[in-house]
Image (cartoon, rainbow, N blue to C red):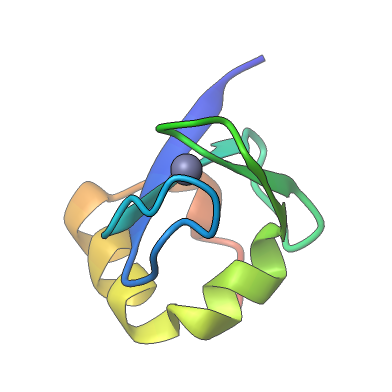
Length: 74
Ligand SMILES: [Zn+2]
């Protein structure tokens, strides 16, 4: 299973990583489970995190050109 890494302007509630880098299994959807790339903590639904860091995520996606995100509406 592939995993995409996405930086969000949030901090990890477990290890305090800031900015938070989340690991999301590919294909990415709002219902994908997101985990902290640093400590592996379960962070909940990717859709919820995305809502929190939407603006920065958009920039990160455009910068990274992640194919998996292209079908997702922001
Ligand atoms: Zn963490």
